Image 1 (cartoon, one colour):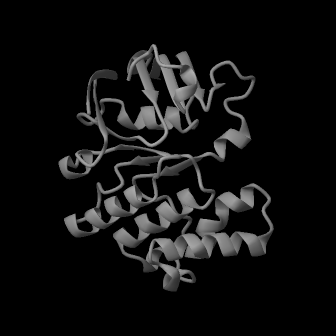
Image 2: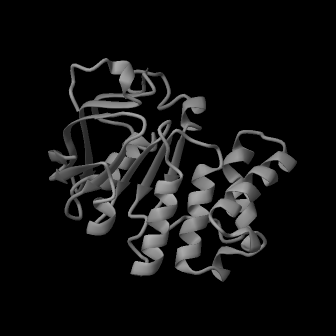
Image 3: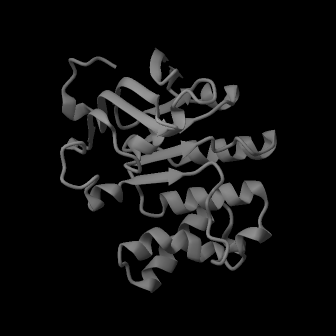
Length: 232
């Protein structure tokens, strides 16, 4: 995307973003001067070999991991320079789908989907109404009282989508959403994701699946923590 566009056109901007981990007194560079502009209505596939930095970039964009260097803006809020890692109200604009779903096994499907709303202090009856609506959207209304160990892999990911979408976030992030699924369930999850993202939202996902990556409006190739190219 062109850097000379008005910055307000972008819901996410990252400039010279760098991140490193340290192990055995050795620095391991994960992200290396990442520059990226993202507009509402876009779907972006992050592709590249394992260890390239795709998941770390998603965690940075999801305000789960801070940058070591560089600057990040989300909805024109400069995240890097705030006293806290993020503004909590801004965090509600982001839905994150983890590769292994990360549902809480002791909770029912409905309770798992309610969790983001509970953290916001929304009245319980309202939580359940909103959660049931999202479960209906992903075709799992009848599974509301089940626990995660009673679901298939595809169903677990659909619950994870419902949980990520229950706050109606503008930014939806997904880390290998079809990585552990067979082709049929993978296609179903892909269709579900894209059906939930309109002109007022953005979908960013990491994937090794060529079919899923080609569904995106833009492919961002990452290698050794740096962006190699954009393909539209």
